[in-house]
Figure 1: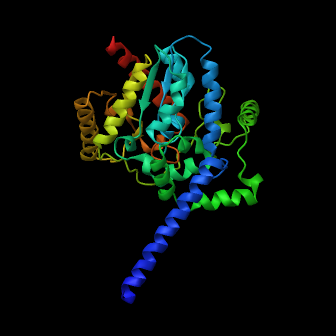
Figure 2: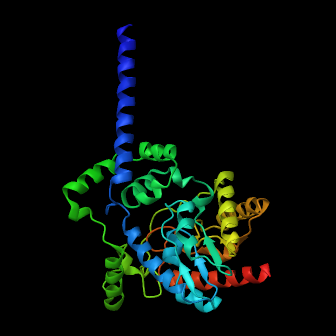
Figure 3: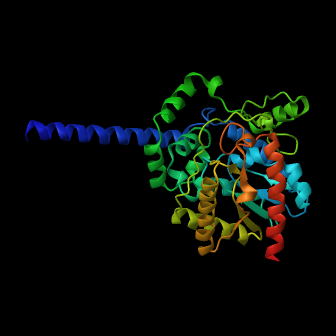
Length: 342
């Protein structure tokens, strides 16, 4: 064998060995390792509080409004306003648009009962991207919610570990050297700390924290808009994603719930009439494609398009004022959708 082929064979074997080592160590960590506080682990704490509030709501036999979406609805919905308009209790389980739809649905299923209305103001990425393959999703689940990964088939689990950034193993190893720094607090500790924060209002609106959840579960957004970037709303519609939305819609309906699909609130990106028309066309195209697949997207352009000043730090996070307006508008959309289904 020539030196050239010997070198290529050496490189190939080295790459395969590294891959096998990474996957093997990763599998061990997933099965035996502990969840750690790193990256977006504050979301784990947010879920602790939201699930606590949802369990409390289950004591009320009244049909409920249950929200499933990313951070646009975490920041954008005032539960008290929405409850007042719809005359129903609200369980807002929205958290982060980087989490895949199956993750969101898995979180709400225990709280869905016959007669409930599941509202899905999904961010546009849910129509275009396979978030289960995103490095953000892989890394965060492998760090602070290994239970989600453990339930995967072995091949998919191995692929996730292979796709994940090296930060997964690096931080996991560091967590054994500095356990206090990486330790995730238990649910009862978080609930206690949250109740103290509600009483003392100690959290600042500039930080992302479970302590920003008010007594009714509403996330307290910033009052002032600081977002200066150019919004990027993706409209590359994937049939696979639409099929996934249809699948989960049927799953929720099988539990006796009504599912209402709406747009999220978004920034009026273009200031010219020509630009506005372009966004309207994109939104209308999305509605048409969904309708062809038996899905109705409730609400219109005027309902969901807001000025830049209504948004806090990203193109989906509303300010306090924006939250009030969007909650009232969403309540009206829900009432109209429920009425149309009768």
